[in-house]
Image (tube, rainbow, N blue to C red; front, side):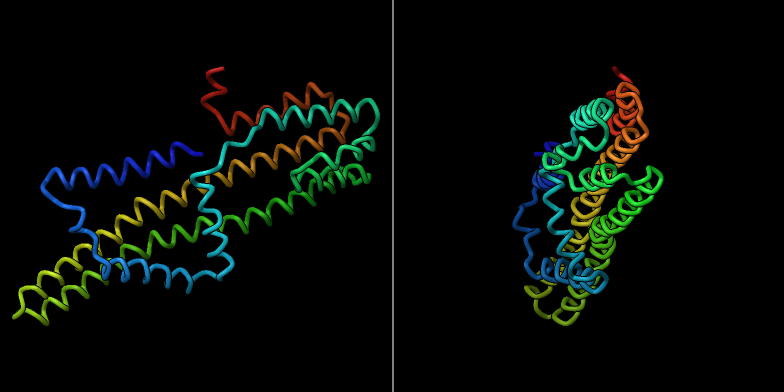
Length: 256
């Protein structure tokens, strides 16, 4: 569980509602189904028009990673790769074929399979780097869904505000209709701006961080396998791979 994400949601929404109630407001004043339908329905429709359905569904599936996704264990990965380096140094790289079944990461498993099959290190780097680039290109579309939602939502909120004002103008003789129209107008704007700045854009930013962490892990795997193929000393392999931890946790490494 990502405490930062949960804490951010609670603090953001709680702070806004608390401030509103301190000024005499009520939560019921901003619960307008009509405004919600306009803003969220319009935003979802715009997203579906821009992105294919598979990308939208992929974005929804990745939403859980914002709240339930631990940081990659780079230390454990380094230990695993150093273990492979020691075994390859003693028994040859072909001996790693027996360890393929215990490798759960598909990227690392594919790289090791190519290494065991005798692929040239330069060619292996090209193949796996192409795989990494293609995967990164596909994954970067996931945050774009939420970034686009953050751009559309305030604008759709303005549309809802204008529609509310139109209703006000048509019922100036009925004070009840006037009040409801004004409420929809202002609440639609709140929904649009709040959802963009408290949900969509922060989610996009957190997913980018998650994707970068995974990319660093895969780059570490690739460098580790290449180093093993080149016969690098296991201690040098460990030192080389630790530089990736500095990128993931620069402040922690600086403190050490």
